[in-house]
Image (cartoon, rainbow, N blue to C red; front, top):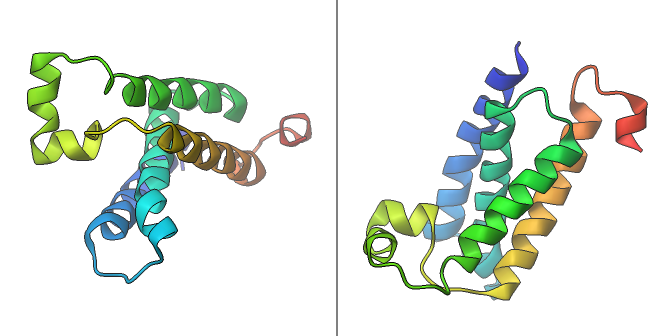
Length: 132
């Protein structure tokens, strides 16, 4: 199976899990209820970028995904009427969020790092040099 298709399937598997983490009555502890959705958003971002750029190594995908997630979070600090109006929609809440949090950036980077690590371990044809 081509890597881009595999990454797209992983993205499509991540999305409902992330939505469930945010909206289903899972009775999670406060910590998991607060950060699991953010972490899964970052995992989905990683798989989206990996699907678009399937030839990149996990480290490059980590860097691009981490920068993108951080920029999305930082964009919440600076008001922009069109983007702020979009943030009030359901799609805007899912894609961009509404409130800035440094802790979200930490959750994003940790989730992306774990995903990149797993991607390196399980990617067919990944070199041992990339895994270490």
